[in-house]
Image (cartoon, rainbow, N blue to C red; front, side, top):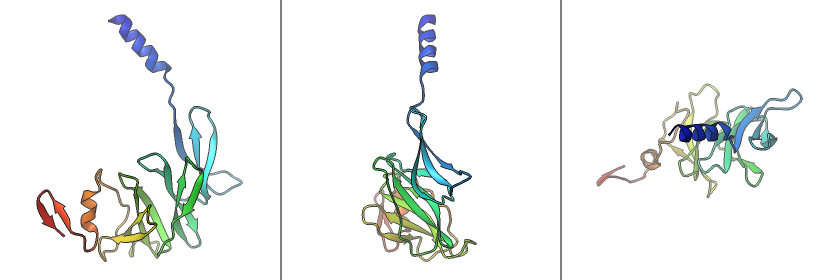
Length: 173
């Protein structure tokens, strides 16, 4: 038993982390930018657009990053596909778009959106990755900020306007 514990401890100590860490690099001679740090090769690779003002958020499937970037007088959400090396900025109705959060299935991105920086007109917008459409959730409510998805998408569908939701045999709107 002592030998087994020693072998297991040796294996755990020798194990090196692998994968990539997303981080924001704020170089002195360039605008802040999201980079991937590869733990195996110890290399740093820039992704997406420059002018990052928020924290990068991994999609649950590990293929994409979403983050805030400066755009004009506001902020936009940039989505980078780390496998392909492409990125795009979501077309927004409002000028200030912040705090992106992925749905558990990586199919949608929720974020705070509005025209002011003070939060008084902020609402929750959900962007459908497949259709490229933005939809306001939460009815006409404002002063909504920093969305966080439940581990299941089911509960958030209750916020969708006009959506009929079945709750375990009970129905509700």
